[in-house]
Every structure is written in structure tokens, then in C-alpha cells.
Image 1 (cartoon, rainbow, N blue to C red):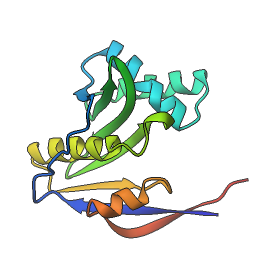
Image 2 (cartoon, rainbow, N blue to C red):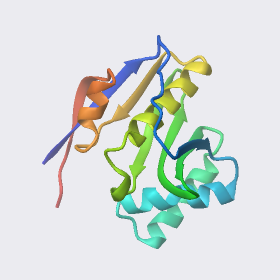
Image 3 (cartoon, rainbow, N blue to C red):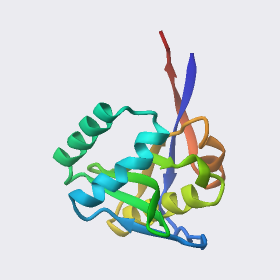
Length: 154
């Protein structure tokens, strides 16, 4: 059994983004951008081609509620993340960094980009489901655990 922290943070301050050399953060603007966005998500979440395509199609259908972000290094999309805009609370989803680009501050930069975007749109709180890999980062940024989900594997 795995326990997944359900965390939240208040959006009552500006989240100052650290400079990460050679990394450019962008919002997905169109279908071609989303095709590039899915690449690190597919790798990080170990999706096969079919699953990645279906997931991408689902996101395209819900496009008015999601804002997707990419992190680019010299023309290569090395990380991706999503912001889900609900009625009162913004959800942070799909944080994915290619293995060879981890531990360089890219995930933190994507977190800040999403938090600042949610704040600029008037949201007061953001939530996420922490992964074992990201829990320490989430804690260091000020996220607070409110509950845990128990996941069973067969």
C-alpha cells in the first residue's frame, strides 16, 4: 500500500521564480505544443503510446479548464506540468521532468509558474497530490498535507 499526501498552499504571496540556466517556461498554445508537452509526461508516468494518446485526447476535450506548461532546454521539451482551474481552487497536476534533467530546479520553476498563474487569475488556494519523488519539494515550497490517499496495487 502506498500513501499519497493531499496537499494545499495559500496563494497569498508572489512565488519568486529562480533562474534555471538554459530553461524557458512556456504555456501550451495549440495542439502541436500539446504534442510536445506529452513527451516528458509519457516518460515520467511510464505510459505506452496508446495510453499517452488517449490521455492527450482527454486533455484536449477539457482544454478550457487546463493550462499546460512546458520547460524547454535548447529546443527540447524536458519537463511539463498542468494547472487545472476549478471553481475556487486551482489544482496542480502532471508534473513530469525527464530523468536526465531532474534535480536542477526545473520542477520548482514549473510549480512557481503554475502558482503565479493561478494567483493572477484570482485563485486563493492550490492543491496537489504529492508523489513520493516530489513530496520533499512540495513541503519545501510551503505545501501543507491535509490528508492521505491510500493506494493499493494488485
